[in-house]
Image 1 (cartoon, rainbow, N blue to C red):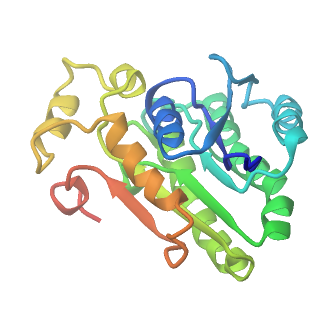
Image 2 (cartoon, rainbow, N blue to C red; image 1 turned 135 degrees about the vertical axis):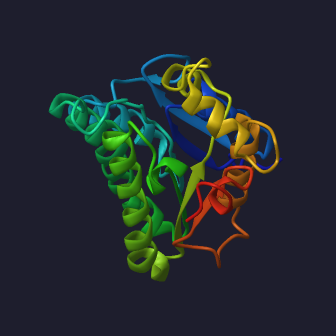
Length: 236
């Protein structure tokens, strides 16, 4: 009888929303999800705190290397250009961007030793520009830069790095940052060419493709899961 263990995939912010959908899809695809979040049944940690992040990573790697990672954790900090506080900017940088760097750096030695790795960074369509999103858009755009650099640096080791940019997805995070009675929210939804909001499962499906060992010739790319929004009103 084989004693081979299912491959593990580390998912930050996997307790709810898009992260939870990625966790469930990963299980269906035969992976063992390793979740780091401030809530839920996985490894509990405040990922906005570098020290707590390091502790959680040490716990996650105690059972050996993890060669797949979804840097999913993130938060929106709404504010106009005049009103975006430096405190929110620093928190957005730490949670949305620094965490991805710290997590990936912790996993890279194992990926290199194995000669295989899949890195998926959760960006956002807002990286292309959106009102009241200075901190959020800047940090999510930063993930696109990291993705491209990592693709160039790590390809020789069998490691791919790609980004996913969700558009309007029906999650508590979206609903909290985009009030249903706001004209801006209605305008976003009405602009989607497929005439519906996305679902967390829509995003999880794209992530699953990028985590697959057969997707070794796709790297440095940003996959927008937006119902066509990036080629419509909010085009690139």
